[in-house]
Image (cartoon, rainbow, N blue to C red; front, side, top):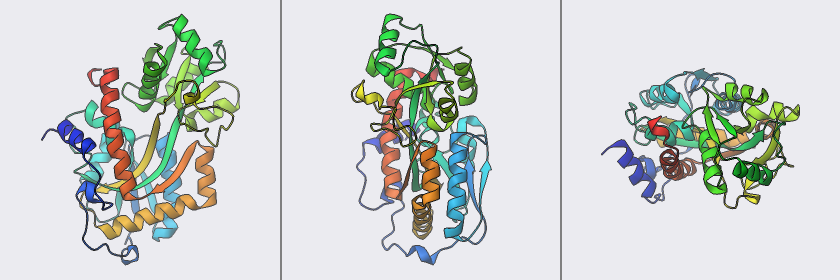
Length: 333
């Protein structure tokens, strides 16, 4: 079965009752999480460079789960191939509980449609372990733009189709898809300007060379606080704790919602006691007030979900991302 066909079948299949049945790893008699502990430092592989939203998330959770697991947890950045290098390294590692990938909707839902020849399968070659956090985007504009609300931006974009430049971290990324979904549902058209990462896109927004960005909140917050960019709306259906005064875009564009997530995945065939122990450690970590507060300051919603919840969310986003890849033509870029 081709990778895309497998992903489609996965998206349409119901989630079975066992937390790990979806990835084919269910066990008849789950063991207690207390029966397993790591015997050496644990590695969290991150697909992107230090300083980005995925890396920040990984370091927060690594610090928080080290004590519950009783071992140091080290973040290793393995950058390249659109995030696929770190995922491949974990897919090929031993399922002994010492190596995990800090996965995102990009690496574990979207990339299979953008890069059909990736050397691993996002379902068959991984064990979902835990949802860590959910995040959204904030729609920000340059202050020179005469729009102080989502409604005013839509009116401006409709009056001048294609005249507003929308910067993104690259074609086929979450910023691109958040913007494309907004264009589709709001009935507007921007000119897409892809960059090699979110930082250069933000630099050009600050300079006024692009006018619009759907930015991860962690990357936009410093510039919102300094008044260098103007937030108009958030992509979640409720205000974000870090920006309580910024309304959901859905209040103007009914039904609009775009979320991303960070989760932990291990190699395929990881024993259930390991999955349960690490998932429990993540849940304990995100309940800690200091960790929770820091995540919320960065615009994240701490989750700490189970393996089953992580699997279910991945399944749903496989469907959405396949549609958005088709909508944007990102796979042909």
